[in-house]
Amino acid sequence: MRRLSVRIGDELTRELLEANQSTEAGVNAQRERVRLLRERLKDLDSSDVHNLRATADMLVKKSVWSIGGDGWAYDIGFGGLDHVVASGRNISLLVLDTEVYSNTGGQMSKSTPRGAVAKFAAAGKSAAKKDLALIAMSYGSACMARVAMGANDAHTPTVFREAEAFDRPPLILAYSHCIAQGYDTGHGLEQQKAAVLSGYWPPMRCNPALAKEGKNPFVLDSKAAAVAAEAVRLQRRPLHHARPRAPGRGPRAGPSGGTGRARPLAAV
Image (tube, rainbow, N blue to C red; front, top):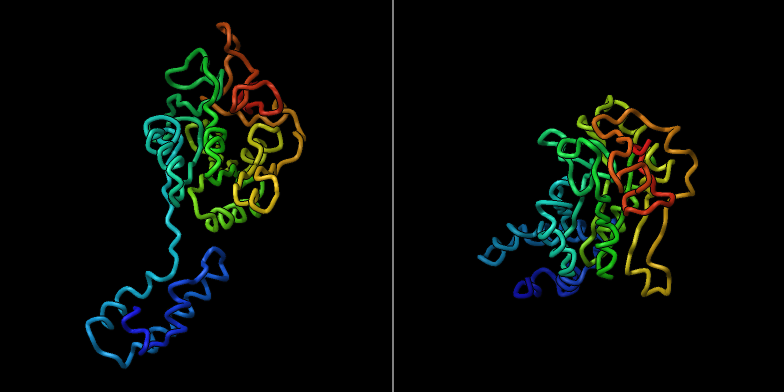
């Protein structure tokens, strides 16, 4: 492009190469510059012109996400995911967390909460749910968020826009319903709302960019639990909660293994 700057304009060349595309407005402005670039290339003919014409759309920032379930993110693919988060590279990650291996029939995963009954955990899972959010935040370089579309459909796109603007690895954990949880998935959004209202899945964000502005990078986008988990149970089978059958297995631990407000819907 720089070799053609005299013919397409020095100012347009500079703006195309140095454009700030961290916001939706910035991306739209770049699309308009690319449209103007194509207009100026229309009557030109050379190998550089043909190459630029073929690749001009690449000047506009693309939204590319790696998407997987909790079996991948918490278990079999955790090593790769952890490497990406720690690398500081701008690779976007979205985890659809159903708390079981959904594609293979609902087996226990490291995302399954303590005490929940699933395949390979007939007596209730003995270990706490892995806290992937805390692991990501511990690096101090990743933009981490937890969302539940059914609980707040305005919060979710806000989180995605913020993640897109962050020039480091964003990781979004999305509470996801699935058939393996044993209830009519037509009520899936209600289940997501219940998970938030009970305090089991509190939406949150951790954006290191806020620290540069002198702000707390951690933002809790959730109020205190409004209802008890017992009151909002939606018959999650096989992810129901087992009665304690062995020490350490019982209705007491949330996603991070604690005993506070983060209490599983299944723990009833």
